[in-house]
Length: 81
Image 1 (tube, helix red, strand yellow):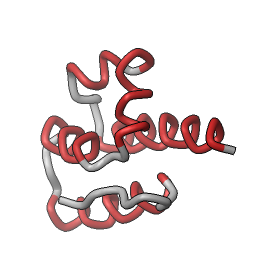
Image 2 (tube, rainbow, N blue to C red):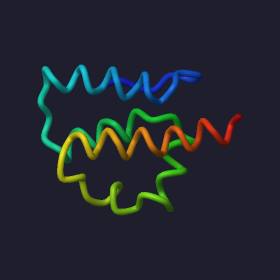
Image 3 (cartoon, rainbow, N blue to C red):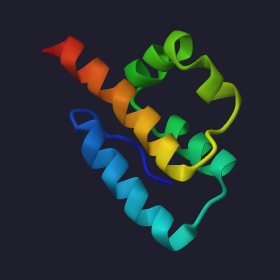
């Protein structure tokens, strides 16, 4: 399991996790749990009201999981700028 380090762009974090998942081939629920757990706190907080379903139920595919995390992370990064 990886963590998004401070200052690390979400696309870099997701890219690394996607690469690791090629080998690990985690089921959707475990993949989404690992991705969310490793997020910067502000991205995780952003996802609570905007992606409640994602946090409660794993997406149907790993790609949907990566897309949801990337989208939320980009929104937070844009707010910082």
